[in-house]
Image (cartoon, rainbow, N blue to C red; front, side):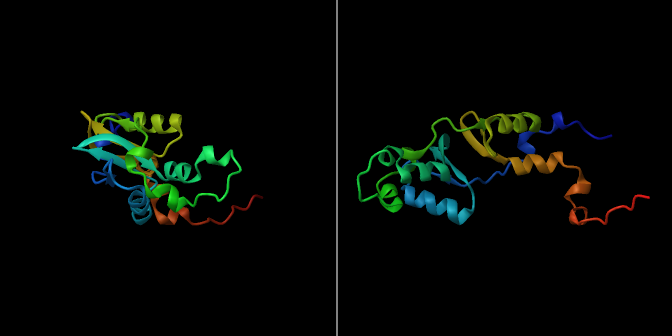
Length: 161
């Protein structure tokens, strides 16, 4: 008998070793962390508690300085200059998307879909437990036959007579 998708819990599918930054980490170091780890965002953790999240989009927003874009002042600040004096705390989203480890995968999928995001920090009592991504959820929701490499091969078209 197959179990219901509602019985699958986030805690069983999360990545328990997410990449993290401290609030005082320079943005250049956060940028390097994102690039080296090949991830779109890092959790910002202080004394074991989640205080925010910094994404590559946050870094691009700061580097482009939207206020500066509305003026015609030159020379234009280089992205490296924009990131040089700032820390993770300056760029982080103070209300990152979080879910509890006891939540169902259906709840996680719904939250990601509604917010149009691809990852959630898994947090219990303020402490980071891990991260779950849309890929993690999709893997569980996808029938096994579609996860196997042979299922991805193009099949010959049927002849219709």
